[in-house]
Figure (tube, rainbow, N blue to C red):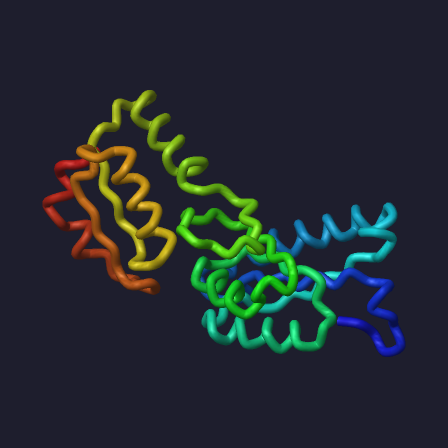
Length: 199
């Protein structure tokens, strides 16, 4: 955030939310590198409307409520001009509730095309129509894959993506199973004889 004596008119403060812990924490270094490079490129020119860009990263790997509380507190200072994020959908939903349209919020991760997303959340990642469905078409064309299994976490993105896969491949999904986020033992799925019916 701003240094002592620094005018907020001199800086565009971007709050960057990435998971610094947990299973998605593996992406944090690349996310931080990407936004650092973007800020450096912008600042090497005229900045944004003549203002330098500065990025503050917070941990999006915590519970959605914890992340939203921190974002809310930072927004209350009036020193946040925009939010970027690459994190899970539950965090996006919690953060969108507390931003309330006060600042732009650019969500860069793949997303699930849920209805009624707030207009101020700009989705710049891929929806299922741009990531999983083209891959499935390629597998069908190249390898003759016709019978599918959907296995994922019982969580917003996998369930919504599964819905889109079922809509596109109505009679081709022969097995579908969702397990709690954080599950480590997949033995019951891997030994399920129903998997023998899929490609």
